[in-house]
Every structure is written in structure tokens, then in C-alpha cells.
Image (cartoon, rainbow, N blue to C red):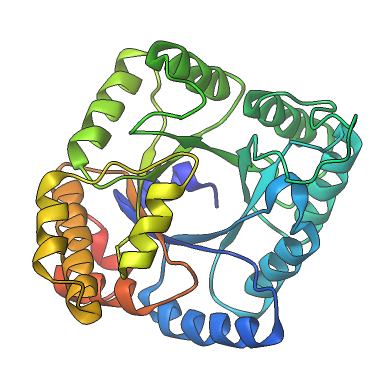
Length: 306
């Protein structure tokens, strides 16, 4: 089922993101965590795609395994950087054959160590170009769902580091929607006011698709630092920093503060009619399960009518 249809049916969704494991040990850990998350009945789960397609096969294998061996509905990320149209169409053929219903269409990051003289840009420059390609594929190819793939794209409540002009940034998001995207999943944020402002600006720009909010609980000081180091950055509100400072660096206390903050984000988002909450799980289950429990939610079906 397309994500836009699920949002209409449920009102609000809960979903999770995973990344492909790089070793047998990591794979075993991931599927142990998946077994703990599956009873929460997420509306969907997404699977990331490495820079320049560096995890292409691992992403495909994880998506198909989730589709065939678990009750979860996987959505693969697909990036267009370093990819030709023929390569993208080949990937879409494989996902259509596997019964995948939705794709997250992203521009993606240029991989490190690109050979000198080799361009990262082949047949696509922007995510909007990839969205258009997927829509054309839907028209020209057979798919188990006669409407083809639903298409999601990324949104940036705190802004995109490569586009400091916020008006231009929204123009580019609108271009993705006009090309055929039918839902948005945002980058993580820690101040819900950033999300509400982003959602309002989207509405003013004529963007009417569901906007799903990305949430990542802080579970360690090292993880918080990695978020700050990301190319996209993260804005930590002063009250959150103050609460983290009060822990004195105690690992358990940092995690409690981070999970509590994310839980309050989720409660407030649900109270303000968010289309969905997408948890960046880092392939772990504990924080997400704690958030569900504190919200009083047994599984994602409990969100109907919230």
C-alpha cells in the first residue's frame, strides 16, 4: 500500500529506519532488534542506501529479506548520484518483482574517493529528476500495484546545509512534489517549532502531501557529537543541552534524558496532528520501545484516531 494511503487510513503513522549490516554479527544484532520491534507493528520501515550506491546489494538483500521473512513493509532508499538511468531502471525492476510498494527517492551524497576526472552526475542532478524517472517507470512497466511505486522524498526542518537560501530550498522541495512525490520524511530535529514552521511554509508553497517527522533519540554523548558533526548539522535547543549537562556525563542519565526528550517531541507532534513519526533507530530497539511504552501505545494501530 502507498504511504499516502496508509496516512489517510491511520491518521498518524509510526515507522522505523534501518541501515544494511556490514557483517554477520551486525546482521544477527539487527534481526534480534527487529524481532523486538516487529510487535510494535510499524506502518513501514525504511532501509538506507550508501553514498553513491555503495550499499546497493546489501540494501536490496535487506529489503527483500524484510519483505519475505517478516511482517514489516520495507521501503528502500534510492539515490541517483553516480547512477545512470539504466542502472536506476534495473533497480526499480528488481524492486517491482519483489513486490515493493514505495521508494524513498534521494539525491544522495557523493562518495569519498571518487576517481579523478569521474563525475558524480550521470543522468540525474537532483532528486526531482529521480522522482520523475520513477513516475515514468510506473507508467511504462508492469508492477504488482497497478499504480506503481509510491514515492517519498526528504525534507529539512532545520534547513539544508548546501542550500542556505531557505526560499530556494523550498522551491526545490516543491519541484520534487511537482515531479510526482507523494509524501515527505524529514531529517531529524530536536525543536518541534522548527517542524511546525517547516510544515506551515510547505502549506504556503502549495505542498499538500503528508509530512512525516523524523525523530532520533539521543542515547549517548558520542552519538550527540556525531549528530552535531553531520554535514546537515543538528540544532540542539538550550533546554536539551542544559538537561544533558545536568547528567555530568553519566551514560545512563544521558540516555534517560535523550529518550525523555524524544518522547515529549512525539507526544507534542501527535497532539498537533502530525502525519507520522519516523524513528531513526540506528538498528537498535530499546529507545523506540521505551518511547512507545511511555506514550501508552502498544503498537502503531493504537494511533488511529489520535
